[in-house]
Image (tube, rainbow, N blue to C red; front, side, top):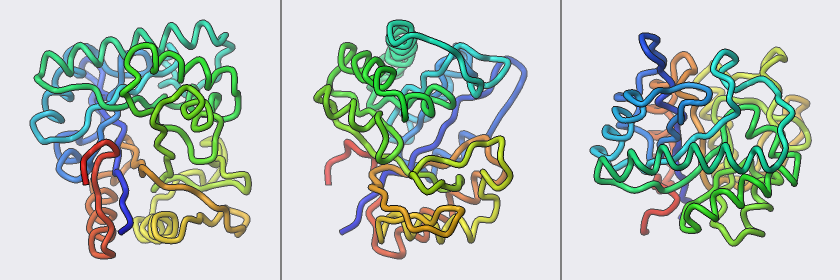
Length: 255
């Protein structure tokens, strides 16, 4: 039987600014990647989001990023592997504390935005992130772009690696995501998204924007909580997967 984790980036509100319908999305996803305060989120938002995820049985994950509130963590920064290690340990610690306080546990880590994209290609940066995760808790699962340096670094560090694919992003021929700065980077039609998801999960391939078929390993599937229509995407995708006989469960959940 095919199995997939359905994850969502959330907890990205900040102060009086609200983003995403986290409470509703938690009814459809199996893992929540919760912002740690560096690109979005604040203590109250983290607390509220973790508490809701624990109450609904959704796996709680840390979503560490570059220190870039103004740019939502999507701007490149020149950071050393040592700096990456420290900022990831710091942010995991914040989420772990809230998970424990809410009666749950931290299950996984997924880097956010530009940190994720940089580490997908930069092995030294990927090794720093994997080392940070391992040194905090080697039982944590590290999410990374399928086929990327993050996956190889996680496996080399002795971690469980979850190869991630995306429901609402388009792909390039090398398996990387189309940069958000380019037209067509986001998939806004839910039917197009469903077709891409079925191909990735059931067939192990994704069609790049060029039309090329690119092989992918799909352990966990991401829907961005800040994407317009994210709730409809999550609802339709989960329904389609379950109808196709796919088991939708968090990566670390027992079969």
